[in-house]
Image 1 (cartoon, rainbow over the protein chains, first blue to last red):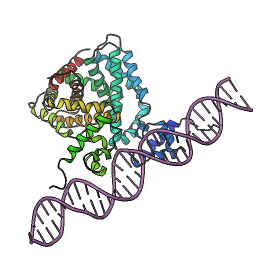
Image 2 (cartoon, rainbow over the protein chains, first blue to last red):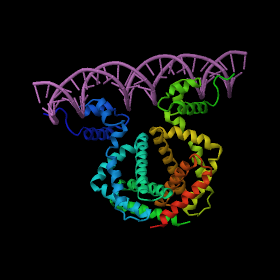
Image 3 (cartoon, rainbow over the protein chains, first blue to last red):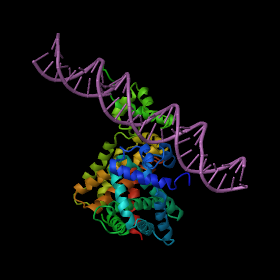
Image 4 (tube, chains in turn purple, brown, orange, blue):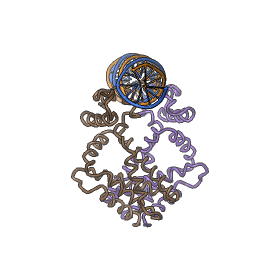
Amino acid sequence: MARWQPGTRERLARAALELFSAQGFEQTTAAEIARSVGLTERTFFRHFADKREVLFDGQQSFTQAFLDGVEAAPPGAPPFEVVASALRSAGRFFDDERRAFARARQAVIEANPALQERERHKRAALAAAMHAAMLARGTADPAASVAAETAATVFSLAFQQWIRPGEDRTLAQIAAGVLAEVRRFAAAG
Amino acid sequence: MARWQPGTRERLARAALELFSAQGFEQTTAAEIARSVGLTERTFFRHFADKREVLFDGQQSFTQAFLDGVEAAPPGAPPFEVVASALRSAGRFFDDERRAFARARQAVIEANPALQERERHKRAALAAAMHAAMLARGTADPAASVAAETAATVFSLAFQQWIRPGEDRTLAQIAAGVLAEVRRFAAAG
DNA sequence: TACAGTGATGACTGTTACTGACATCAGAAC
DNA sequence: GTTCTGATGTCAGTAACAGTCATCACTGTA
């Protein structure tokens, strides 16, 4: 028999979400999460840089969805279209199976300011990745920044709506609507 | 003679910036900051919710500058114009006297991810305040969110540029340029 | 002028997030 | 079969915070 059970990170992350949901983020210690899956606190911190990070695993695969969407846009497409393509790709990543999980996770995050802070940081990391991708594709810098930040903003607003109770449109549909709203905003006045 | 010196918060904040600049954020303990102005660690944490917060004091007066700008916009003005007005008002708040201080502060923040996280959180708080102001002024919700987030984004990008070495345009000038870029972004494609 | 509040602070104690160093030991590689 | 590797356990330590109670210059009131 194997010395250690596989999938340590995943087991820790799952246990953490359960405990946070049941008794709150601050009321749950890292040692408690680790014990609940038969590990020690030290091992927890070997897998996650800090206690908050356990809720934000798998960030890079989701960022990758945006970058794939950027790459899928035809060369020479205007930044607005590139952002739209990135958002469609992200919309495909967050399919309907993820929605229930996302809701549970978001409930925990919304109950704790420190977790909201970490979420903004992840949003900023997404914007930075998009920025680099826009630059790499030849878009110059004031425009590249605006495009990247707009992508992150539209995603953020659309995601909030996507997990709202009763909402059943896809993330891609909602994001397209928000992006259209950006266009209206800039056109008027 | 008074029992305590006045301006405790300000003395702590000033000492903190100096120590962080000289030896780094993580290398400076809260107890050290407090001792350097003749106080105890416990008193430090009575004035600031956490160690990072000492660098983000006076946030609400700066948010107020945005809200003043919103109020200054004529009733019925389109959201884009309201945002432009808010950015002009913020530009007046960050006058040239503040630039050197802002640069020193930003150097500390950019050297530490935890401080960057807090800064994003402040940006989000600004967006939330702008959002509430837009709603109060009668702008409905998808548009209000987009306007608020755009204001925060444009300010953020403009501020970064404003403190760049060698930059000597005013913040208002830079922000106006970034806002024009947003319009170009949304118009093309 | 006496005297009871008030409020900022100090002193003390405790919890927990995190870190460094070293030991352990099943399985893979040779 | 020996050596190596890598994930883990153990132990000790630092520093960020929080709760609680005492202190004491100042303020208002009688």
